[in-house]
Image 1 (cartoon, rainbow, N blue to C red):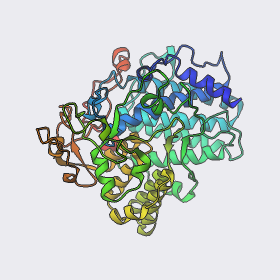
Image 2: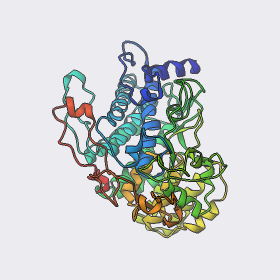
Image 3: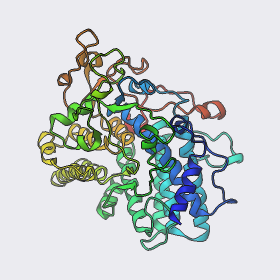
Image 4: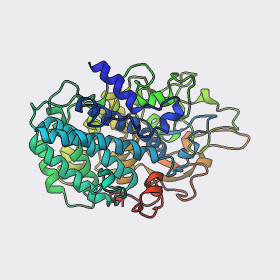
Length: 495
């Protein structure tokens, strides 16, 4: 039954998929589930895969370009603009489309579960809704929420401020948590198959932790945050879609299928290791580099610069650089134990004022990241980047840990914590574009970023992109879509 469900749901989520390029252009299919066609055991996995198809692929690698984990691979140009921090409303439209599709399907399941009094399924559907909505806020800043999901009743839903959406999401989670108990049955799903609601309760608590930690600079939530932390019921293992992938077209990890697979007759080789991440990891002898990236053709590790694809270089061809280490069955991570521990370290430092526990959770976060990566040698990183109560060390190490699991969340936390920060260097200071043709990583300070070559002019030198432009579909068809904000305007929690 499970294998059958996987085939059907992935096919729904990727119905128009005929090439790797088409994956990025996928739109909501007219054949997507509806209450009249299928039951919740099909609708909910479709919601999961709609979220996964964008969050696990496009949002992952775009976040990694914007946070200088990745850069354009040598000789290729498909995503060169992303490595220059260039974003367009058309390019990000698919993010909005697929995440709102996930929300729509999760909402159907939530409403059906509420009517039936099936509170485990109600909680699971709420978690997917909340995760997708938070990702939209974190990407776009302002989104339709209070008037969304009403179909023909309201074709022009207003856009809500991010803080309003966040407060609504907390209310949704609290309402679902108040109804669900550990032993409640849960609708068929990929995230926690064959589990009752206990795992979803822990996931919901992790979502609340992330929301509170992001909004606490703007909203008074420390008392609620303390109650949540004191309850301590968080996931004990990484929350990820794992074990549900197959080495076939339409069934593999979406980022693998986009960037690495041969299913469609060709492979796009676009994504490579960024010299900023390379420099930071090698300076501390970080063995996770070998887990997060594959060695180059010489069996070595090397990163390139943002904003340039080495098109005129005679020395740095594609064989020189590394690509992400991805397999067809690589997990798609929603939140890891490492992330949770980093949040808890920050909580104990900034809210509870307990430096012993803050240090304990900081070190546990790095160790958990090594464990997830299957790497050894966390001691060298802890020695190079010890706990010191600063946002810098925490921010840099969170950025490193997320480079192997979740580039979008790395970009979010960079904007919030302000680390890793932009240094004074530009790509031209790292790579000699002249006849010397030399890329010198040693000029970079570990834990600092640099201005890409030909960076998007709206952003300019020494800055990072702060938001996605509003989606093209909303700009064209929703009369209540606000006037466009510049890419340099932070979302509410990063102001």
